Amino acid sequence: MASKALFSIIPRLKRKEERKRSFLKNGSILLKDLIASCDGKSHPIRSYSAAELIRATNNFDPSCIIDELVYFDMYRGILDDRTVIIRKYGRWVEVDEAIRDIIISMQMSTHKNSLKLLGCCLEFDKPALVFENAGKG
Image (tube, rainbow, N blue to C red; front, top):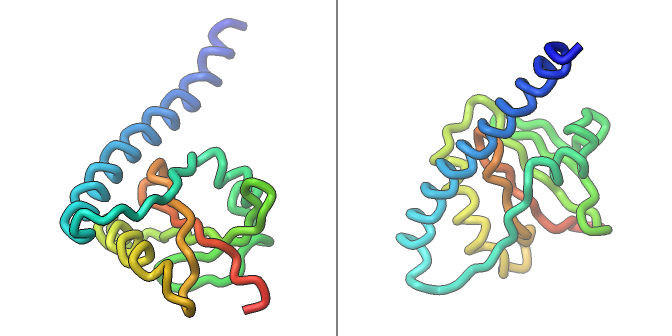
């Protein structure tokens, strides 16, 4: 009985370790690129956990998909009692490209024709971006 419980815990611990490793790797790349591109200006965004995004999209359920593109899928989810759009990258995208997209999205957030970047999740193998919902737009 105890060995059965141990075997159910091991995959969970491995997932937790993978998320921690991804967070550290992706976070260091993001920080380096932010410092290089922001000229010392502050562009605060929130860091979301993988658990929050999984819960917001019902484990990235296909019914939550807004759009499927070659490089990423767009999901609608609920975070902090508001509707958000989550961009989750596919296998064709490199981590550096996803990080670059975070930086560009941060810089474009104040533009009236761009979605505002609320934050990102660095715990997946490729970062996921969280945008405010465009509403009727």
